[in-house]
Image (cartoon, rainbow, N blue to C red):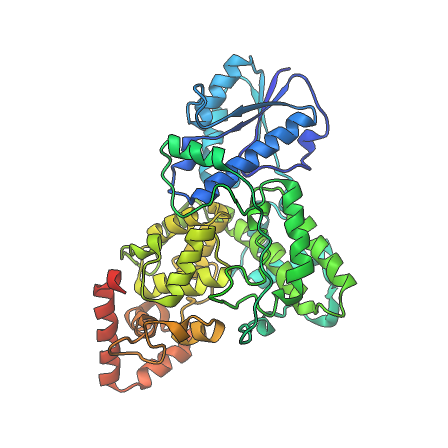
Length: 510
């Protein structure tokens, strides 16, 4: 029976059971489409990365004996629509049966469900065989609970997969080492240079230019830095465990103007395209740690494992539990426009200039840069979460909605009212200075709340709490901030609010 199997651009799992056997009447299809390049304005490296990975995967399938249909962006037969392309191919190849793997994004899930409900042929859905928990598992785990505590979910996952465990108890008796993993890089400490590939992707880059695909960011098409094959992804994993893991945990929150990757793995794109599985990543890291316990403490490996089997799986569970309503949430009713420097990096705020600039140059920033610099600024300034979602989804090579929106609208912007985070993650310049070297060379003065060159983060911080007292004052995790605010002299509070409003009214000029 002629069968057509759809492979989406983030479903490049070499180890999927689909590929165990070859069959002359089974066709696999991958498509480059304007439907996917245009739903937000993506970083040029993101589009190139996905197209390069898809092309390499298609070639891998062909060399292992599978029949592959690959529609390039400029193919005359490409309708640029997922469902229209499937219709065309099913008629052309006289397909009697259609199959697809569960999409990770709600919009594609709905599009394919609607399409299949109107098919005159048989059809079936397969799992992607990638994640360590199911779509529904988090909802089942927390059924009847008001709070969705990531730590509880993480511990359950550790027990299930017996990772860093001694039976039902964690190795060393301690589950979480996050409290100790918050150190700034020492003065004159230079992290290991990241492993960068040097690939020529000029053909794909020229294709995007010729097809007038609107992108953001920068790229050297003759020296593309990101892995787009499984072999390259495994090489990056090996580089991480050998060179970065010994310092990962302790410096995972550190930011540096001289290092855009610090000791982070940069494996998220490899995992989000499914070139690597989360289980093989953590098992490889744990195996290396077990061999190197004299130089790699358990705090380093535990922090890494928690990010992948805890946070990543947890965020996916929240996404499928709360969509589609989640993408409409705006608990704090923020409506301010995203400043133009989010697209250019041209701002006098050194932390923002660096975090945005490296995002434009590398399509990457690590989690603290996203949460406590760009996200912190947007939350304090009251930026519309719709606009911030679009920015985060477009600018990062690893950004897919299932993982982006729960981090942005939830963890970063508190727009979900506390589903993901129990409090808003905001800070003044003090935290940024504590975790980075940004403030020392900034135009603004990190020590000043008001007056000429006072750091915007300082007045914004108190203005944020002041304007949201009705929604936040009873939150037990931030009571100390309100106590400090109320103890300030009235004239000082008024001056801080006035300073913040001056900056907010001139947001584009900061």
